[in-house]
Amino acid sequence: MIILDIVFLIIAVLLIVITLLQGGKTDGASGAIMGGNLNIFTDTKERGPEVIIIRFTMFLGILYFLLAIIIHLVAK
Image 1: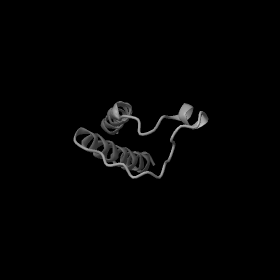
Image 2: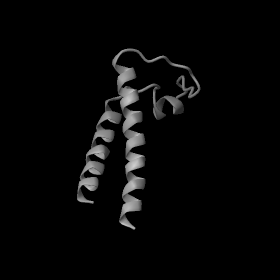
Image 3: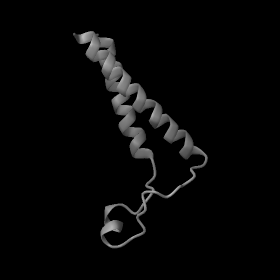
C-alpha cells in the first residue's frame, strides 16, 4: 500500500512538472479580455518535442487516474 502511495505521489509531481513545461496555445485570459485571438476550436498541429510532451502528459494523466482507482479499491 505504501509503494502505491509513493508511486501515486511521484506521478502527481511529474504530471504537474510536465504540464508546466507545455507551451501556451493562446494569449491566455488577458488576451480574451482585451480582444485577442482566442479560439478554442482551432486545429493546431504540434511538431517535434511538443508531440512527445503532449503524449507523455496524456499517458501520465491516464496512469494517475487508474492508480487513483486502484488505491481506492485496495483501501477498502
